[in-house]
Length: 182
Image 1 (spheres, helix red, strand yellow):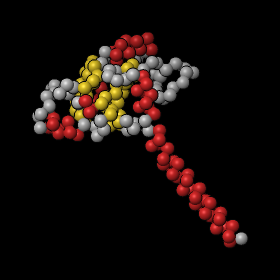
Image 2 (tube, one colour):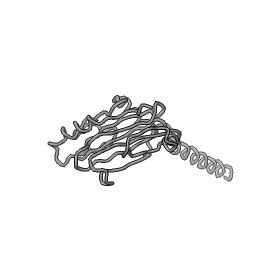
Image 3 (cartoon, helix red, strand yellow):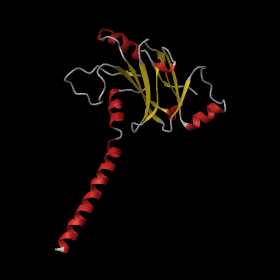
Image 4 (cartoon, one colour):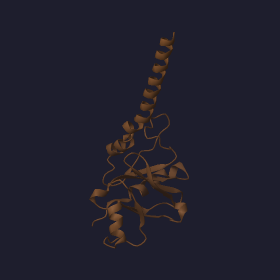
């Protein structure tokens, strides 16, 4: 009887260890899924406007169907990155993600940026060069430091009415995205 009780306890402990290991290990196995899907869309070197999500269609990136999206992938090994352009007056937001999907930086036009987006992305070494004034950047550039060299910038616009969506998508397509020549 005691022998069966020990075997049962050992089985429960082993099952618990396996369960915890699987739960903790799964995110590391799937962490680049969004990165890979965006890469497949061709978001390098310029912005890619994502197609609108229609009711009943698959939504693998779990996007809000009311928003218009543009995505740009940057490789900071090629130099500092930039995303710039003029966006409509209504609500917009920008988020910078690393390859594993962690938000590095996020802001909205409600932070006093108005309609102008001028974002500079730098890795730690480039930020150091910037502080030493060895890199020449435009005045007014919003500087963001990313610890990873692979970053993805997601720009979201909220058209007030669905008939305005094409105009908002056109504004997203007009954004400039790439590496700053050094």
